[in-house]
Image (tube, rainbow, N blue to C red):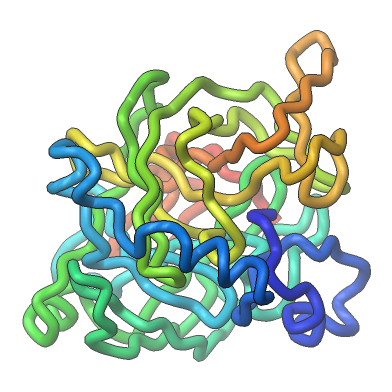
Length: 295
């Protein structure tokens, strides 16, 4: 979904899982993408005073993507911590259209970063709590550590997921644990349907053009600069003007009109998740107010 760096490496991880677009962001950059990254500032938090509150603390690096340690408004310090990333970053391959994965065992590891982007710990999953690429593009892992343990051991607090719909015009930062880099822009608006290949996402976030996210930023938290809360998860962008194809998502409005915005990047809202995780951060898709797709 977010621009690929080397499709072959990620293809190895999903061999035998069925046809899947080469759109996830694998672990090794091509020389061209490495050059693009090297040419840009390693960290843009000094670009504007409004970015000072947003750092890389609490973000994580996956083998092929970015992510973050997150909590919900009602999460307790003693609850098992959660990591948020994309559905297309799942280690077992892309979920098929219509597929929802819940409570599946996983021992995946994540590199926890501090505010400067230094890796301070390796965290481990106990399970995939939820993953899908239907209507949204998100995976939530449950960890073997609690929030309290992570904070006392490493001085890192989880990012809180906002439980209300984001607002157009909001200044945001996309924080990539994979690249240890921050991207600053604003929410340009919302897309009724965002279609890429076989996948369709609802009510997606469209960035202003300043957020030129690249491969490896998939799964990055999208943080409201004013509140420090997560309002979305970064997932894709239109690379070269293609229409509704792999790496070239298109916008479809309620009347079916298709719009292509070359070079524009997108994210999936996360405000729906707090209602679906209840006591002890356990997934409950039958909870009141939970609207996430079900298996």
